Image (cartoon, rainbow over all chains, first blue to last red; front, side, top):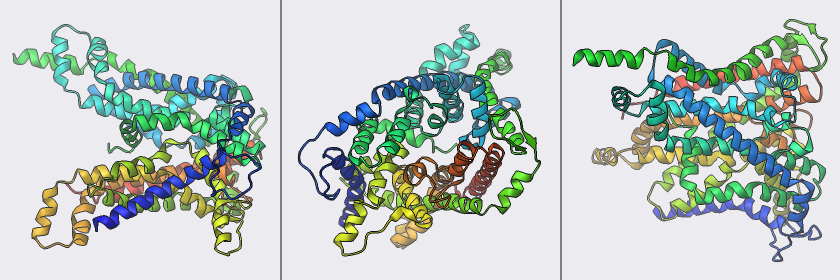
Length: 268
Length: 299
């Protein structure tokens, strides 16, 4: 029985590797090689990567991706931690209502408000600016962040607050000196959850970043794909370039990734 | 002592000043989610191209149009298939894998790493990778078909088939999340429960049905709700593989909205669709929560 289940799991594992096999195989062979995608090519042909890197303007895409992801992650952590402190510690009726309001934002699909949001962005920051995509991202990542932070702060003993209060610490002091330093584990979770979501985002990026020099990786790849859809090897190379940073991080920090990305599914 | 404590409690609970700490976050919600949401409702009553200052009030006309739009019926049906179909596949297979992996296998870590890997990758990129499999000329699946002596098939040319292919692709990518949730749930069930059941003469199937499933209910609730919301919102994979085509035959409400607004420039119609999508998602998530929460038991 155990042997059978091990067998099944190995098959599942291999099944999950097949797409990556095809992707890597395609990326490393010249377009002139027209044999089946399944047949491995043993020569390391790197021109696809060079072409993808230059044609899709990956340097600027990487720069944009890193900048946008960093700004969103840091803002979400600061704003989220700030908001969660009163919501977790002073549970008045009004604050509970605010909390419900914050968390219920999670079920509003970004596309539902696409039309008015687009109009709003055009009228304020204008499209194809960093702010045009960063602001909606922050708004959409905050609910889950507040959800996680509030849960975590709620689990920190209140006696810590009381002790600090007796020692003459102000209420904001309690947050900055006691609570904030204790948030490290949940901050790691939020960083990964939000970081991966923003790095891979396509929805907001394709709406709000329309100038080529502002493209993020997904948008750049999307344009590249529609332009060179017959150059399948270039596209494959581009896909690899776009995924490699996260895949490497994932392999090294696997435990945190699994915890972080599944945290969105933690029971409230 | 008592007075000091009650004083302290009062101080700890009364100060409203700390509440200003959530004001910045609230500003974001109000400006970028609530305000556009209500604007969206208003726009859905307008005939408007999305750009010009001119518009026309048309009342409920856009919603009436929705009810008579055959393409929209298609997209609602597709959206439900994407949502419900992927949820079923991901949870059944995810639970299966979790149960198998839970038997203290040596390969557990390795398989988990591989199965969870696609979760990290952009859905758009995974969509392109699968496009290499399903494309007509030289696609990896057609190569196998030809090897078996079958005629190659243009897999993504028929909307009905594409819908299921996209559902499978989406399930493949995110099954890892369900698996990890269930694995954590299974590892949280005390072994003594199984031992007690064994003493009572339970077979492994009855143990699974009467011990595992009821105690796993909280995990099932979260996994199902998360998957169904994700599936109903599906956008990236569809854009990568078919762009909703041919016509709207494989479109979800999301991709049809995108087309309506940016290509057909019918902002009112797109907004009305957005509201309908919001209603569908809310109703389904509420029903789900109610249904599964009722089945949860105390450990």
